[in-house]
Image (cartoon, rainbow, N blue to C red; front, top):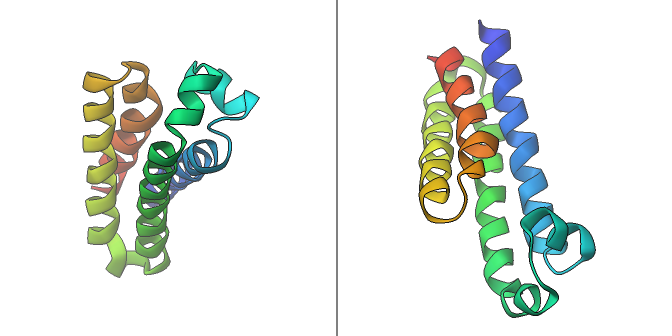
Length: 116
């Protein structure tokens, strides 16, 4: 069970680093626009907002890395950050796109289940 918890938490970390890169560096580039379905005009206008959002995704990944690096004593930190990811994913699904629940909240929820 512990290996599954670590594996799914690692998946959440990788996803959030990917989100960071997309939002901070590729938002107004062809790949970022394609992933998020953005026009060039909108991407240019919202670039600073997206970079801020990407930074928050980086903080979530960093918190999970921190928790995992502490081993068993970091379990509560991992639980906290996985819960933050789930809440963010649910909010994103309700306010932006239902797909967010699948790509953000679901992996974190599975990781949380195995962590608990």
